[in-house]
Image (cartoon, rainbow, N blue to C red; front, side, top):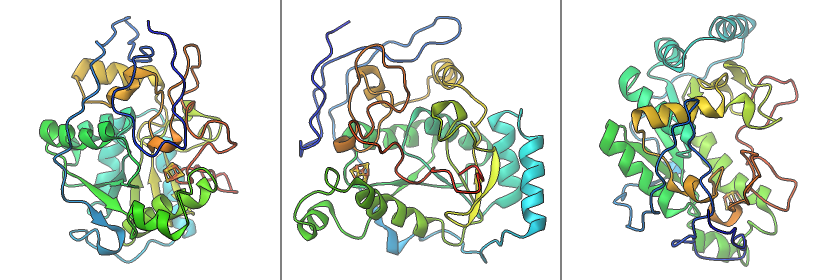
Amino acid sequence: MGAVSKPFERTDQRPPRDLPQLRLVVPESPTGAVATPQPVPTHSSTMTDTQTANSLPQHAELATPLEPTAELLEELKEASRSLETATPEAIIQWASDRFAPHLTMATAFGPEGCVILSILSRVAPATYVFNLETGYQFQQTLDLRDQIAEKYGVKVDMLKPELSVPEYEAMHGGPLYNSNPNQCCFDRKITVLRRAVEGKHAWMSGIRRDQSSDRAKISTVAWDSKFNLVKVSPLANWVKQDVWKRITDEAIPYNRLHDQGYPSVGCWPCTHAVPDGDHDERAGRWSGTQKTECGLHSLEADGSGI
Ligand code: SF4
């Protein structure tokens, strides 16, 4: 076990490449099986087909927006109740049966997202999946897109904000991730997500209740009043060990930064490795600030589970 190195400075303009191995965070299955840590990939992604949010999703079929009628809300409540102990496969199957082709999924290529993508490839392979490509993601994260596509045939669209990172930083006299991370997340994530889900009836994400107090109240199926569509969380009732057991059992590709002290991986300026002993899954995200979420999964005032 190597010594814990100094966390990356948030003012570092370059994503770290050759990271010292800090500790093996995961995976550990209930049987004690531990995956072998692998070196961080350093090759360039072959991804070339990123898109800006205003021009997409080109192949998505637009539908009349859903309205949160009393009837629909009651249906979602009942569905959430009946799916509470269902497998992720069953939940995704239900979502696909109910909402396809107007079902979509957002993934940051976290462990949960990789598990869902592996299931989608079997259960609902036509589902439109996108990533919010802020321009600040680690190369290791971008590389996962190709690994997932190669293994499962699932292509993830990389949706970019209108302004490139140089354009955005020039407009603001420098990066905002230190001085105003909420604005940065809004401009480079929330705005893009809003456009991506236009014309969709439901979206899926990999959040789990045991990840944070913010996420502890999520429902498996609920109305997302922030983005005005249904939100499905197929892993809501899973715990961390369930995720990593599935990854280990099925050799699902995952972000190798998790082997290097990163419990959670987001944009590189706002993600740090954490010392041994810090088992908070959201540790290392926006360290030193009160911020814990980018806004995609913040709870609404009515506790609707988003
Ligand atoms: Fe900006 Fe950081 Fe939010 Fe990424 S996580 S959008 S770099 S503030």
